[in-house]
Amino acid sequence: MPTPIALIDCNNYYVSCERAFDSRLVGVPVIVLSNNDGCAVARSAEAKALGIKMGDPVHLIRDKIERHGIRVLSSNYTL
Image (cartoon, rainbow, N blue to C red; front, side, top):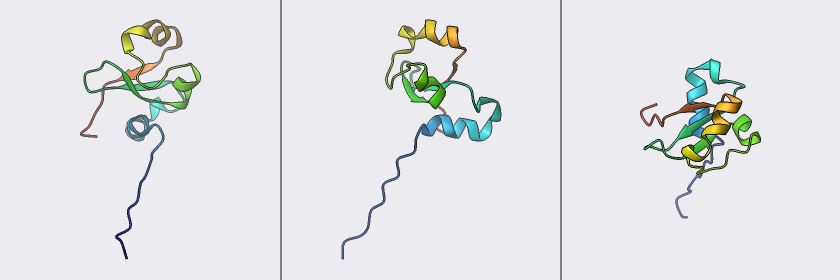
């Protein structure tokens, strides 16, 4: 019998991790940026509802971030 393999796909993973350690982020739009802070790689449901897409370059959505008070976080791989 082959060895079983499990695949787990977590929704908004990096945002969920940040919210686990900072409850002030719950219920507000949050995006987490790529390791060079260039693109959105994780988006909360609130940020998705505002039209933030996976991979959006942060410099192109800066006006939307400011208009809607979106919290922007750098990737925290240690977390």
